[in-house]
Image 1 (tube, helix red, strand yellow):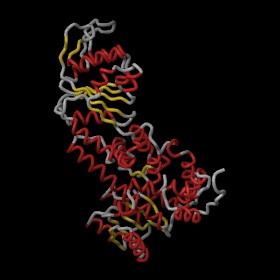
Image 2 (tube, helix red, strand yellow):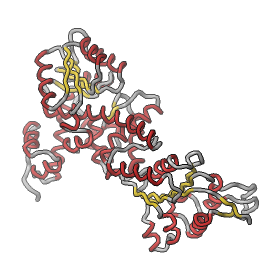
Image 3 (cartoon, helix red, strand yellow):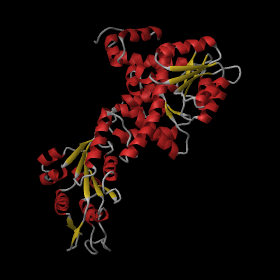
Image 4 (spheres, one colour):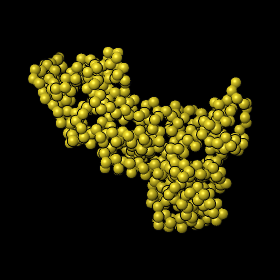
Length: 477
């Protein structure tokens, strides 16, 4: 994804720099002054320290969003200082800066807990982008914590993360509908978190002390589903060796969540309709009516209106379910939630696997934002779980993502670099490949490529010149 577009989601310019504090730790006065001037012009609150001890003292005095830390200093080297910083604050963003940009130094810095690694002399545009990314990620981590705390206090949304406009609307709707007795229909693609929203409705309702009972109605054959929902008496069918309660009884005074209701057979639909109308049902093979007080929340990933037109879903049941409808947005429509969700899942699976807190690296965040996520939040969760399990360092990097997100070529560009190449050279090569791929896609039309990257044409031309990219042809063939 283009750098400018990434910045929309992780913070850019005034959005990120406002109120953000940076500590520069470097023994060279010229370097300190140069970085301080550059960052203050961008609106950052900047402090400086001339050595590691002074830097650690300042870190003890006040909080910072980011530390720019020199690799080689006379009193204590940057790795030693970084390790001490990590003992105090495992999540503080730290970018190492060095004139010795070897792969070995980069690996050592990342293993010690560095967020990123920049080589002297640096490119101002790239350095500012890396600073924005690091500060934005720090904020994202803090927002995850704050959002979870605020949502838990206000709504009991313990496992729902989101600050996008579509999700904020869902949160408000949940708060409005939860106290009622009305049936709720949740519509949305697979993986959008319908069960989490159903739980949130239950937990904010007067029924919160009662049971929340979920059932996937699309995963069972009709006979088994009806037995599961309504229970049966002994001898009702061959394998009914004892009487058994159904989920409607188990969910009494609570909430029954019927997932994938659009796949339910017409005969079962008729029985569900009767329960909704009369609050009564009978066990399979039974003769006595059983009264229950159950709130129904149904969910579907298909168009029930179309199902009604095709005769696959009862119209009367549809209108019974469609009292209050919540449409859950797919992840591709709430992409500014992706950094928060990714960090939330990284924290969750790091804890589950006994690993220290893990960051999402810049190179990994870009394809996460660029991907359309047909499997929605569930697919993102699976991708981050896989990356956490495979991770050996302090960050989730692009090589830990599946090929369908980043493409095989992008991984090879990072993994098959020259053994003697510096990190700066590796990153330049990656940038060159990304720009070249986009130019080829646009028929080598720089104006169109700049529009796709959402950067000024002059900026793209500067990059083409700096990276020695040869323009092969103009326009499309």
